[in-house]
Image (cartoon, rainbow over all chains, first blue to last red; front, side):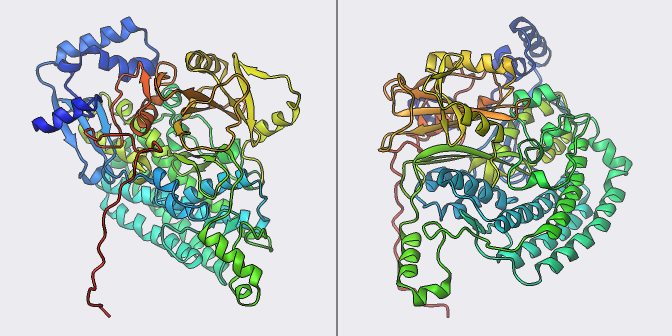
Length: 445
Length: 178
């Protein structure tokens, strides 16, 4: 903000400016804020650290902006970096460029329309958003959804996890200069998206998981189509191993870069692959199972060094674990209803509307007014590809949520960036951002 | 559908007696089998710190709610005065595999809550979001600035009395492309 008007406006609203200032301006307090509280240093230790670094670098530090239009910031993430030569001293993520007020919008939409809204948050893993919103709604409604719907949900989510991690493989490769990896990643992701399109009708933003079940039954030939994808993937993943995992340049570029410890990750609220990369085995599917994850076999992949390479390897191997889960789901998919047979929650089948007045009324009521949800508040969470995705719903007994809050894993995980980047090179900053795998739609909501 | 919070639900079955359950001095209620504590603003930091030392290591979420137009009962325990704003803190214990939610009442006239930053540094961005959206100030927060809205924005958009506004859309009789 440079103009006098803008500065005035900031002063009038009595809120601080969002930008970061040079260390010389902010002083040791900033170091205490960024480091001391996480590492649990005493105030004296942190102050000493701050003073020390401050004197050394006061004269030559530069503040640069990375983004919001930088290609490797995955959308519209803006980072302010304080640099000493090529070394990153401090980082501040500045977000909000993609803020569209989805939580406010969520208060204006009925529970049936809700998934349309939340699916646009984490656009790389839309089905998880729908799932968590529907699980929260169903908990408020206290309805039991049919077996087949639960297995369909699990099936779609694991396919979605594969596609989300493939997207990470592509962008991670691109960020680090492995451009052919980008093409391979997109290619494989397209296969999984085509499968999702066949089932849900859309590549992304499916709006397929609805309160009470799923929107439609699985189409004919879904099993064969899934098997085609599953059969093709192992060879491709092996290719990635050859191309990246065992390649010395790739390892040099990632190993030991952006390290974080378990204590730091927990203090900062990081979940998902970031927490697991530190060797801490925490996966909600295993630890606090939802759907039928307690009935399928899979391994929770953990790293040991908490660096970018571990986070890459974890995601690569989670694709394999998801494929294992999908194979088991194929074997166990039960027959039955794909949505709950509760006339108040589920719209009647199209054919019934022509012959039954009651069905017509229910259809009309559900799509105009929506179904009423008993008052109360719940927090429900699932393991999205990026970590704990939570939904906090408050209902006042009407057909729209009184408050709909999404705990986005990307939003919280982004706080680990300053920690991972501290003291690293600016070239490694790109690797670190990429390994956090933030989806800005979910960060800004 | 299995309970996402199975351990919590089990506890819920056992506490049906009217004697009020306390969590470090904060009354506890159940909401759909999930444990909810209601500390006051003054108690909040001490309760969270005590819980952290007991193994509730991670603060998952800090959310705000504006109860301005809420007509239904809010299921608050006796002795907790309902206020316009509420700050909802969700903690998780990895050893117990359980979550606990803290609902803190925040009056409209003095929307200030002590920050949890000293206990859980990960609440930094979440508290900024609550401040941005509801105008609830977190006392002691190191960098309480807007996070999602532009820094020169006026008002707090998720408040119920914050008008969303409308952009007038004019439909013209445009020639059809088909």
